[in-house]
Image (cartoon, rainbow, N blue to C red; front, side):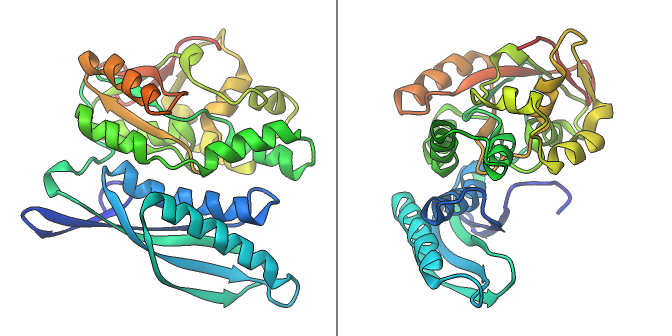
Length: 307
């Protein structure tokens, strides 16, 4: 509990540990089947971020049975189950409660060899930082709620949110990454800071290299920014040095709370290009080297290029 890791790890023997996590939230898209897929992928991601393999899951459901048709719940559960099948995960149960607000997610149990656990600390100076999905889901989801997102933008962001991080996790283990976290509610800068907090290291991000959903920046310029972005920025802005020539809206993107975001992986410099190559060969097409770990600035993040 002393570190803000993505999941809990319990060692059972010298060659086996279990990984446990839980996550659920309110709908981020209108389509209930898509929402089920996204919520399941999001919950499974914490196991992948630790380098593990998810094995079993249990549904967590809060449902307004008096005001919403049960067909909606069926579609949500169907979407979640399909995503679990894709991940090779067995649904072993769950729990539901009546609630005025719809919520869905999973508790997940996975396995890993104790020596192969990847935490969010352990990065060394000169390590490169690789991000595996574009940023901007929170901003685009806000635009969806406002009825301002076009169908193609909704489809694109939904596809990415529903995409599992299993391939990125597998490649990370093959290459020998030093640290990893998934980018979710604290945004890229919030989760990146957790990777260096208390280590004496810093991070430099190259703003022009960071993958961003095409419409996210324009929506940010329109003010379609979720409340979580402002909370993230208020909490961490004093630890961030932003290039004065950079767009202020890029900062909104970097603090944007992500739903089922990509993995942020620290890998030795000499392995970084090979890792990106392998990721792209296996379908993780947006993977990019977006920055590096440094000794200076200490426990600060510098964003040094405009996008």
